[in-house]
Image (cartoon, rainbow, N blue to C red):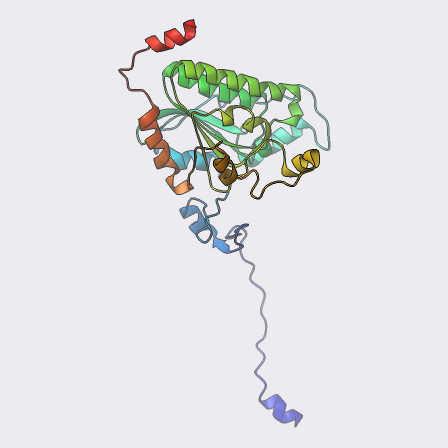
Length: 296
């Protein structure tokens, strides 16, 4: 009986060595948990084809997505952060800076310069969350301030794409001063009658949200982006109240009026271009109203 049973058993196939899937070939969507082929994901601008989840983009990927090919000229690339406070922790601030500079290929958490969107010149700043959480220290604040001042000086609209955990704790009060500095630069941009478009991506938090990111003439956000000041847990423990559903999402803030429009990544370049058509002044615009504002 045992022999009969063995006769009908499926033949055993010898197992060979397991083939490992090359690292980076597939990515799992954190929203719908579908496995996505990395090359196909990149072709879709790193947006999940199943649930439309927007994966993070590096600063250089974002610049390539928004600007006309070959139109970007980087500025202030040589500015480097300094460990003024000689911060010491598990690792020193100087060590962390060196690590992230090597890992990301960036000098700091923002890239700034001049470029064009569908032929329209702009002054651009794009933050990169991969560099110390996109935190704003003295160099990031200075580069963003210079990008704003460049727009005012050269009479060009300013576009800033934010992705940040907030002020950089390694620089203490020096990082908090950047909130006031960038906001003051936007006052000068307004006096020059140049528009400022603020683009909020996931995440945009703390001191960045509390300064220039919330001061745009138009504020756009990507879908489901996390946007706020303090984290949800801190707010809940401070207020001793349950937070509303969807709190600190782009959709929640759109309902409350902070955000003007939620824009899918595939449409962002076209929407910015259209807004620039409406907001950017023509070459023949007079400058007398600007002088009147300054005189006041």
